[in-house]
Image 1 (cartoon, one colour):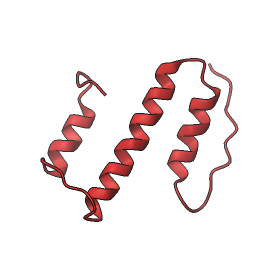
Image 2: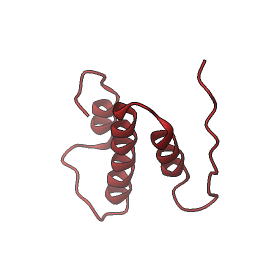
Image 3: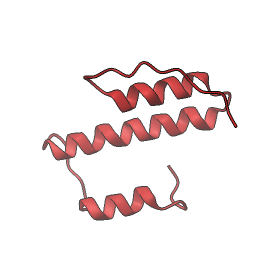
Length: 74
């Protein structure tokens, strides 16, 4: 079992990103830091697409399938 990580989660803004940043900050592994960055970037991209500020080549289900595929390089 790992040690718990204390996190102050903001009620507004980007709470999931705050948690990811905190976990990445206490992790001893660069892979965790890269994973947190990938998740944050994906969330920002999807938000931009949803709000019409970005374009996507594929539909939401195709993008979700790609994000969920463990063989796809992040």
